[in-house]
Length: 324
Image (cartoon, rainbow, N blue to C red; front, side, top):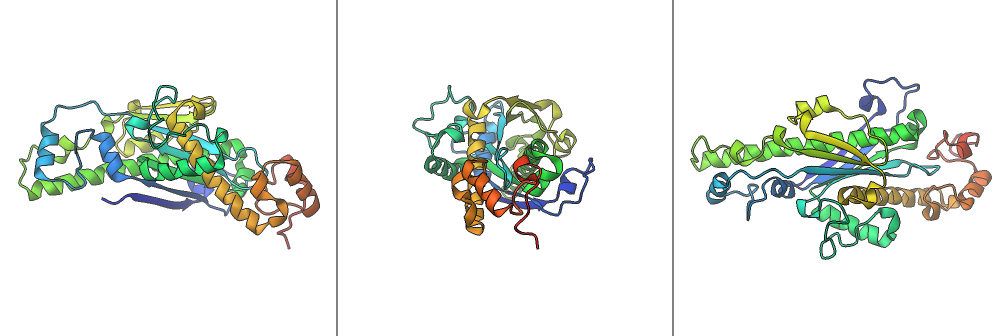
């Protein structure tokens, strides 16, 4: 099976179906990422040389005959970048790592791993962040970024925009992972039928029941986003097996949150470089939208762009250069 590429967009109204918004926001929330299906299979089936994505009769029989092993926990780390700037999106990152790279940073031995430089994205150089992001794209079981634009920030405030983005990130990954597990099971069933494996040796013997999975959701900060447990259950998860925790300074404590921090920061920085080309007079490539002296002077001189957050005090009463 090929990796699952996530490239989606949805409106604020679609995300917040149970809540009314004051104005109709037309800008969309964008999601992009990938699920490495083979890495997901290896995480759920940690048997030597096990690969049901390209299965053989021997491998299936080996998997069936192994004693049941406890399923590893799916620990998804979530963090954001861009709550403080005066312009642009707030970007949420979410990452699921392989078991050997998952846990508390202080306890993990990452020195010789592909994530040897992993730490809070704010404490490492941009060059190192970009290198780590490339490794995450290759080796993470799943990663996702959610881009919540300035117009939505202005509509529901920056805290709610961040929390709703986190909600969407978790919802999207859990849905795609559940579908991926189902697809793997279907593949195993087809191979079993083709090779006349006994009826009781079905895909359910090989691929885990989604309801048995333990899921740990770790959010950087001191607040939890609203979570969609009813949807999780529709996709097969057991609500009792899903634990959600907010972790203050979690990006310096857990590898999954630190990885999510890198994804969010790199994705948002790239957006800032694109805006810098569009609005070169603001020096965005240097301050990334934060309220530096240079940025504030540029706002005073040129006014605000359509990507500035009009709900933020330094921007609120400024004219818009994009308005005709």
